[in-house]
Length: 139
Ligand SMILES: [Zn+2]
Image (cartoon, rainbow, N blue to C red):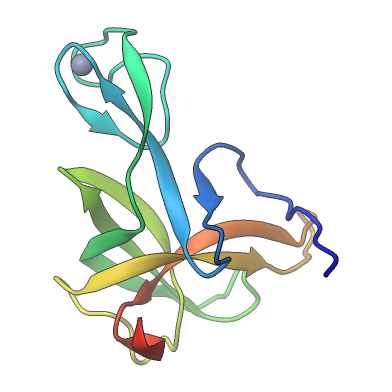
């Protein structure tokens, strides 16, 4: 099997799990106040200390809000977007993968999956991540 490393749209925000089917979000934990943050930072957003340790924020999240971007910019077709809580108050904005007429609802658990942005005027194709309903596909 020939594998080539995908080109991430932004490096260091996530890693693709060995199965290739889910993504682990990467963050930082402040050793002074304990705040978690995503993406990784040089200084804590809460206490501004620079004593941060890299950590994993896992793959699952809870949807807090969602909308549909009907112009389909960058993705090439209408797509869902959401703010989801991944861990202890860490909110992440991401694409919602799936049918825009059947998006995960507020409070629903979702899982982060690799998502390919097609080639466009900005370059690509690029790999980023999206959230997908946990009930879709038996996950
Ligand atoms: Zn802190």
